[in-house]
Image 1 (spheres, rainbow, N blue to C red):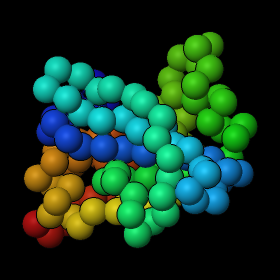
Image 2: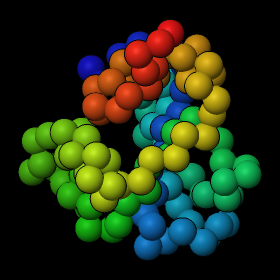
Image 3: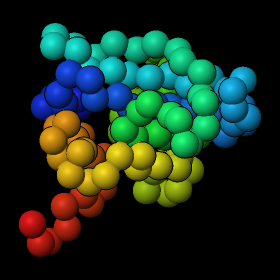
Length: 119
């Protein structure tokens, strides 16, 4: 449900700050398709060439916890850690592009102000 509303082609990346040297660095990319989100590994080419809309960067311990099957609420943990700045969020695409791709609900679900009070 967290990715509900995202348009096909929308891409969110997650990578380790402990492995941040392009082009050897690897990130997990969630990409919206017509039916679901697909996760895959991709190399991180650097910020000037990265092909994601949003990029989350966390330490290895946090990433392991998010991928742990025993963690029943990984996105709640992302929300908490983003707000505490334990996970950094880089917004790669312009605001209007994110709106067009359906990111408003996703960012709202993480407790991030996206639109502000004025539309």
